Image (cartoon, rainbow, N blue to C red):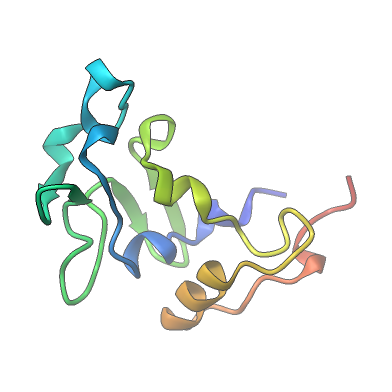
Length: 116
């Protein structure tokens, strides 16, 4: 069974992804590509596309609800690392649930995760 995120992408097309600018500075240990961000204020940047009225991250390669891939998954910023698929770790995730609902997708349940 494929991971539910591979057929979703709703979180990447629902929220502003903002972080401290240092996450884009390799000299400070940052890994997120600065070229994929825009400045919000002196301390924060956001992933391009996520500060729009209809957010959609520039790193998202997807048809939401059908197929999904983050083109910088290994270099994604901390806000992206903090969202988990609901029930993946034994509990619902409100961000996942809100994003899926926003795109008309059914919420994930414990049944979506095979016994480990």
